[in-house]
Length: 45
Length: 261
Image (cartoon, rainbow over all chains, first blue to last red; front, top):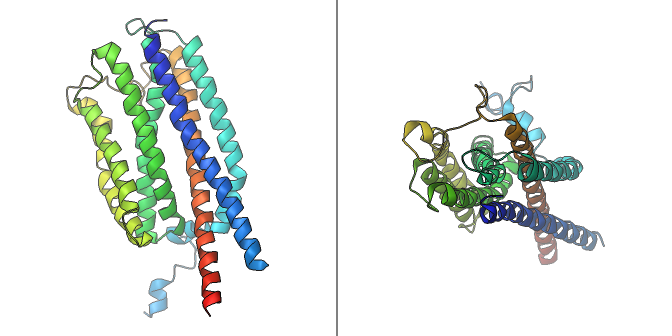
């Protein structure tokens, strides 16, 4: 394959940048769900 | 004519602001997005993986560019999403400014960083593609420069939304910047036609037949649709988190008020 380092670098970026955003969004959403449930419980209790 | 007839929407329910507000209820949004998100994320991941593997191993190399053309399967979807994401940001800003749509502010604030990330991906992969083809990592070409301006518009929006103590002022200022920045989208699109650029003109358009070999077109379509679904899933997940965080703040404030009373 010609230009292999360039192709590999582009594909790595193409997976790492969206993957990082997706992971961060998922973790933030899970944390918010847990905190909301805990806050709601404390308020009712 | 009394005041209520001016303020109230027509009884037919055809007022666009009113019908949009039906989907702005945070509880309804959390329910609908919670059901859609796993499908969006899973289909986006699968289509992206298919498009990238197809483009990397099965699609033919270009007779002039060799295998460097495979960078296209990352670069073109990122470029498409950089512009489409900004269009979404501007649309949310319009909804926010005109109809005071409660979710539009949150969605705009969450699209900004994701759009900046995909614009950075477009610029980086373009630079990686440019080095072996043009002999330079960067040239001040009209297309490259206008996309760099788009990246700065995203960063400006992200900074402006967070720059005020009062979040509503931040959302309003960000919305105005987003709407002003829309002028850059046609400049990006037509830069390759209006100026003599190093960047190649469009090979796919909505009006004409593509000038690309079909064996390259299919993996590109898979990657573009896949990345679009991934982008949407990220924005939906971030907006869900923002809605829940706002609800947590409201509950804590209510508890503090009760304690003070």
